[in-house]
Amino acid sequence: MSSQETRTPLSNSLKVNLEELDRRLDFARNFDLVKRELVIGGRHAALLFVNGLVSGEQLALVLQEFPEIGPAELKIDTFRKVFYKYIASGQVTEVRTVEEVIISFLSGPVALLIDKEPRAVIVDVRQYPARAPDESDLEKVTRGSRDGFMETLVLNTALVRRRIRDPRLRLEHLSVGTRSRTDIALAYIEDIAKPDIVRSVREKINKINIDGIPMAEKSVEELITPGSYWNPFPRVRYTERPDVAAAHLLDGHVVVMVDTSPSVMILPVTMFHHLQHAEEFRQNPTVGVYTRWVRYGGVFISVVLTPLWLLVALEPQLLPANLNFIGPREAGAVPLFLQFFLAEVAVDMIRVATIHTPSPIATSTGIIGAILLGQLAAQVGLFVPEVVLYVAAAAIGTFLTPSFELAQANRLARLFILVLTGFFRLPGFIIGVVVTFILLVTTRSFGVPYLWPLIPFNFRALGHVLVRPPVAVQHSRPVMLQPLDPDRQPGMAPARKPAAPKRRT
Image (cartoon, rainbow, N blue to C red):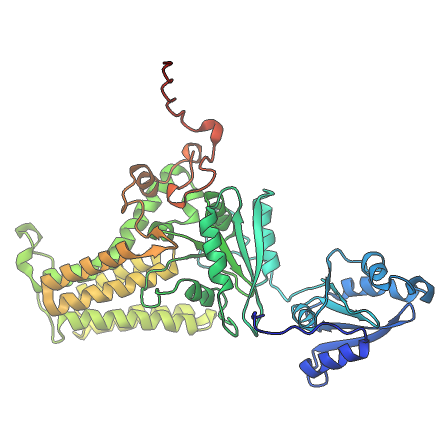
C-alpha cells in the first residue's frame, strides 16, 4: 500500500463494514469470494475467504467451537475471548482497517468480523494449490537431494529452514505491487551477512512502485538492479535447489524468494558463481576439480571458438606452418561469416522450438534440426562442414554453462565478436574481446566486482575458484562479501600469528 493511500478504519457496525467491503469487492460478481454470515454467542458475525485458497479441514476446526458459545459468555470483552479462547488455530492476527482486511483475506487467510467490534480477526488457514517438491530440470545431480523449490513461498522457506536450523536465520516478509500484493521473503543469516548488503536489498525492494509483478523474480531482478537492462551478464544467480541456496546463505549471501516462482535469487554474485554447480560438491574433490575444469574449458570454447576459427580461416597467414590444416579448402558459395551467422541463428531456432514443443516430440525436433538440416546443408554446399562442427562445439559449451542466464549472455558475446571479426578481421576480433572484457570488469553486483577474485586479484580465493576445495579446508567465508563472521570452522582455522608484545617503558 502506498504511503499516499488513506486507510479506512473498521466501524463498530458489522452492516457498515460489510457494505464497504461489498462496494470494493463486489461479492455478487466474484463467485470465488465467499461471505458467510453467522451468529456467535448471540452476536452477528461474518467470515470472508477465497474459495480454493483455504483448507476445508482447518476451517472446520475454527468453526466447530462457535455453536457452543452462549450469549452470556460474550457479553463482556467479546473480541478478546474470541481471539484468545475460541479460535482453534495457531496463526491469528488482529487488524483494524478495511484495507488490511481486504489484503489479508485475498492472500488466503480467513477474516472474521463481529458486530459492535471495530476490529477483525485474521485466521491463517491457507492451503495453496501446489505441486510436490521435485528436482530442478536445470540443476540435476547424479547424487544428492531431489527436492526443489516450488511456486509456494511458505513451502520454499520451509525447505531452507530445514537445512539451516540457526535461530539467527532471518526470513523477512515484504510485499510488492499495488495491485498484485506479491509476497517476497528476504533471507539472510543475521550474524554472517553484511548489514549494508541486506539493507541495500531491502530498501531497493521496498522502493519498488509498480502495479504487479506477474513475472515474479525476473521482474524483481530488473527493478532492484537499475542500469543493467542492456548488460546481458546477470548480476544475480538463480537456483531452484534448496541446498544451493542454503550453501550461499552460510557464505554470507542474501537470498530473495518471490511467491509463485520456483526460482530464488542469490546476491551479490560474481561471474564465477554462475560457473559452479552442485554436482562438483556431490563428488570426490578430485572428480570435482576435473568436472570444473571441463566446464570452464567448455564455457571458454562457447565464447571464442567460432570467432577464432573464422579469423584464421579469413587470415590463414596468422597460423604457424604446422597448423595449416585448420580452415576450409573451399569457402563455398556463401561467405564464411554469413555461414556462421546463419548456423548460430539456426541453433537458436532449434532451441526455442524445442522449448515450445511438447516433451514427447521434443527429441524429434532436435534430431530434425541436428541431423537433417545440418547434414543436408553441408552436403548441398550451403555450409562448410567445419562450420557445422565448430558451431555444434560452441553450442555444447553453451549447454555446459550451469547458469542459463550466463549462457545466453555468452551467446550474445560470441555473436558480437563474430560480427566484428567478419567485418574487420583481426582488429575486429581484438576489439570484440577487449570490449567484452571491459564490460565484465565494469560490471558490479550490489557493489561486488563481477570478476572477483581475478580482478581485483585474490590469490587464495582464485585458487578456490579454479580448484574445488575439500570441505575440510574451507575454513573461511568469501572475503568479498565482508561477512560479520568470517570463520566457517573456527576451531580448525589456521592459527594467526600473535601480535608482538608491547615493551614496557
